[in-house]
Length: 296
Image (cartoon, rainbow, N blue to C red; front, side, top):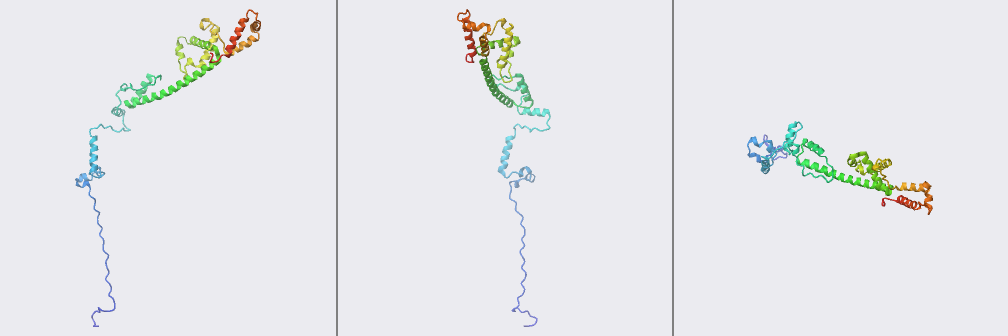
């Protein structure tokens, strides 16, 4: 080998030159085209438009807005409104200017249901002050009267059943003297109430029955009338009682059989001048003793 020359055939490998890794340059994402790109800068980024996805949606929004143009607009009530603002609001939603502006002709009141005109007037006035319109007032009153009617019908039925049951008890107790006792009760109530008899008898008791029809009232005034009749204070001094209750008849039978007015002698002696009367009297007493509600 010649000195000063390089051996290119030789046995030793020359070192490889280092290979550089390719450098990737980041590429900025390309924004998708938007329907707003054609708009001016002051409109394109307006917040009210950024929420609209496409031209179709924009068209729908426009149509809806056009429908609202010219329509009556009622502001939402605010907590800090004064009385005049509330009053104006109530007028806008249909409340009449005055209480008597409501048309209540269509409100149905169940037949027989007692209604206070003064109470209804006060209630309607309150509803007017609260801002209720025609439909609301008519609806509330109609529903109220319907519920009251159902309760009234039920209470009337309960009262009728209570009265009927009480009357049957009195008929069983008084037997054939039932009519006479009722007459005494009426006379006693009339004597106590005078010209106010009808008003007193028509008062409604707590259970729905009328005062004049209540069995306990009838019994109490019948007892009072019996006492007054003994002194000629009812019925113009005439004896009203012509029959006895079963209990009274039984007591009278015992008294006569026990010797009252020599009754056994009159009853057992066919030749006695009062024998026929004694037999008739005893038969009458046994009929009154056996009398029931069916025979009253």
